[in-house]
Length: 112
Length: 113
Image (cartoon, rainbow over all chains, first blue to last red; front, top):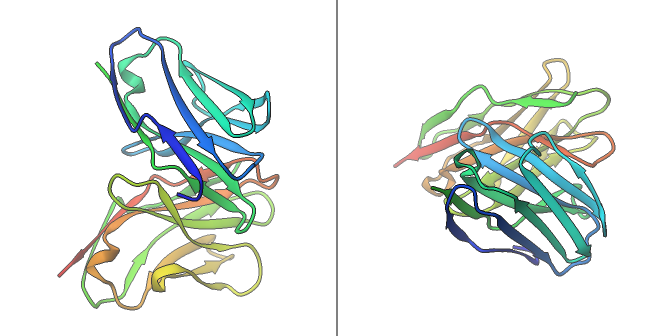
């Protein structure tokens, strides 16, 4: 998917444990985003980044933190996973060729 | 605040028939509107966009969308549906500074052979 890779693709974790999801891009895009997808809610923005060490909150940022120490990597951390964070997580970059986004393939996270 | 609404959770259409997936929007300023498609276990893929210009926008896989400013709608259309069009479709609006997208809740399209 256009130089974006997400890892892991699937993860099962226990309530209360920390979890980090990784998004890696190879095209030097400035803007990167983390969304979660849930039935009935569509995609909701968690956090986004507009450069190295520059991040901002989205509409559902509680319980999540992010870091961007390099242009190519944008990490999403659940400090203490809860069952309500069971979801599919998508990373995206802003695609300057069509004004839209290019998405990664997603990470399916299950918190038990 | 920007938002989009997709009033139908599910649309069923027979193969070969025309299809429409509805989207209405609410924006301040000029809208940047998008349609994305999601196949099972995949990320979202760009279909088409409206930025400015002709109200009828053509996109990938034979899809098109009609921008209607008076009705604040951006419905996705295809003249003849294929079984392979079965997927989840999302309408989205980009905010004016381009930092965020706002997605609808999605419409599941099923094309019946």
